[in-house]
Amino acid sequence: MAQTISPPVADATVALDVELKDVVKTFGDETAVQGLNLQIRQGEFFSILGPSGCGKTTTLRMIAGFETLTSGQLTIQGQCMNGVPAHRRSVNTVFQSYALFDHMSVWDNVAFGLKIKKVPKAELRQQVGEALTLVQMESFARRFPSQLSGGQRQRVALARALVNHPAVMLLDEPLGALDLKLRKQMQVELSNLHKRLGITFIMVTHDQEEALSLSDRIAVMKDGCIEQVGSPNEIYEHPSTAFVADFIGDTNLLSGQIQQQPLTLVTSNGLQVAISPSSTDVSKLNGIESIDISIRPEKIHISAQAGAAKPATHDNCYPGEVKHTLYTGPHIHCIIELTTGEQLRVLQPNHMAYRPGTPVHVSWASPDCQVLV
Ligand code: ATP
Image (spheres, rainbow, N blue to C red):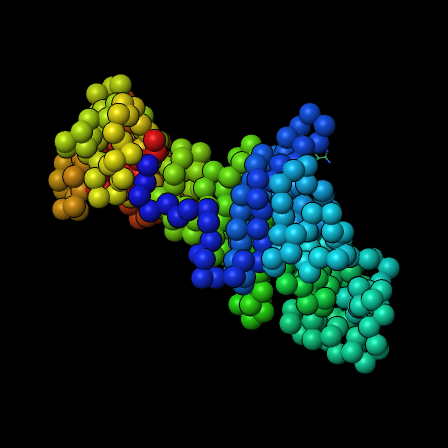
């Protein structure tokens, strides 16, 4: 197991905004969430990431108050929320579908919640104006949702949530309906908004790149359980399970028997891979015979001959052949088949083109092997 996995427990010196203790949610025979424990700090941008059906939205909906807990406890700012209705919680949700009222202007959409609460007119005008300014939509106040682009509609949905001054913003795939370019632009805006407001954002997404680029911490979920909680760097560089390594970005997984002194993985084909004891908690390997390791494609170097231009730190070096290449613009993905039979994915800059069939050597440094027990 990798050494630097952060525990799923928040720093005791930072106040908690949201805490889930042993939370279970079942729908009939279906268990959507199984014994979830999460601690989300005040002011944190926290993402819940995982494949379709893993229980992300159900978790968010329980925090919002749209679903009840089957068992366990939910606390928001130190107050137990079990049984507290959604409108009594200091949270607001932004949905992928925006959920705007089509027959109301932008202004009326944002003002809606305040009108229900019978906020005095002058105060309402000021708060709606401020919320629209925050998302740079003040000049669109008279338009209707049908007269706005997807990105503008999402900004109105954000303003409508922010106008209530929630302690916690819940974002359910907030950028899921936008095309890639607009999505990237809105990611920057969302991040700026979070920094300016300083409130807690909890976002559900299945887009790992979005989670990595926006979040302070990420919880990776699988089958209703948390697989790992950590900073984007910890999750990417030190995945604790094969599922996390594979789900977050591209990776190469190798399985085999472990040999101690020097620490080595030996695959069933006889490939011997050096593992650095410095990047692994060696005590966790006592008594363990077989392990998986993960090596990120960008950590692997290709050279035409053994040793040619190979970084000096690369203590793993093997002969192979280029099998396939895939051009993706800035990068080329190469599949290299080693002479022992294993296939590795390698990410190359797009000016380093190797033709399929070219004999090559691949190399990487032993600290780049992440051990997954
Ligand atoms: P997606 O990314 O596809 O939205 P998700 O990770 O958000 O998926 P959830 O929507 O939380 O997943 O669903 C988790 C599981 O609970 C799924 O198997 C789903 O079918 C089930 N589920 C969710 N809501 C209900 C419901 N109201 N009734 C019955 N089953 C439900």
